[in-house]
Length: 258
Image 1 (cartoon, rainbow, N blue to C red):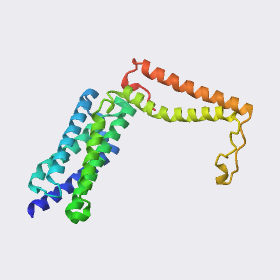
Image 2 (image 1 turned 180 degrees about the vertical axis):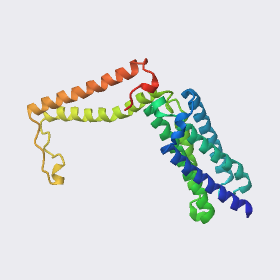
Image 3 (image 1 turned 45 degrees about the vertical axis):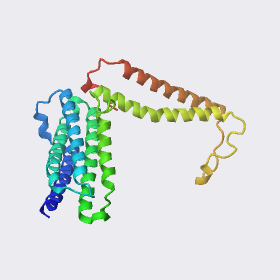
Image 4 (image 1 turned 60 degrees about the vertical axis):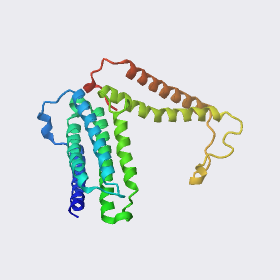
């Protein structure tokens, strides 16, 4: 079947395009340094539009290449379009120069783009396996892989998706990292509070399983030092949050990034 063979060839082209796009994103050409860069609002709008086009193309491909009744002739157009959209997405991503727009924003858009491209690549490879192996290729996987693409795009297009500038990207990254710090400070606080409880430590702390034996209860001096450290880090976290959510005068490209 000429239509089936052509479809398989196009699936391979899309996969190769995805690989080239990922390489381009993580190893951008220095030639873009001499290009007059547009405002990030323009880049962001184009990026979101391309994600919507990729969403539509993958939906069409999933419908026409349904393993139960594939329509190979109808797959050519969305597959060709998908290749173009993937290439355009990588180009759009590479426009976000870290020196011009901010390093944190650059990392964020790079992660979003690479995640979507990886998911698209996994989807087209699944269809290639289905065509090569038939039912043994896992015909049910294509629905899961399509859903993965859609989910990543929906996240990027959401209100908490791609940041509007570097300051917003820094705030978002700070909030993500702060959650880990807060968890650690909370555990330390609980340890300090529980040290004085009657019977604390009687059941062991698990270090003996590593051949290190049980740890001794904290002394009064150690409790005081730990309390001060806990209060210090909680204070630093609070100060950082207050700064990020109150200082709106910092221009986005020059804002510090984590």
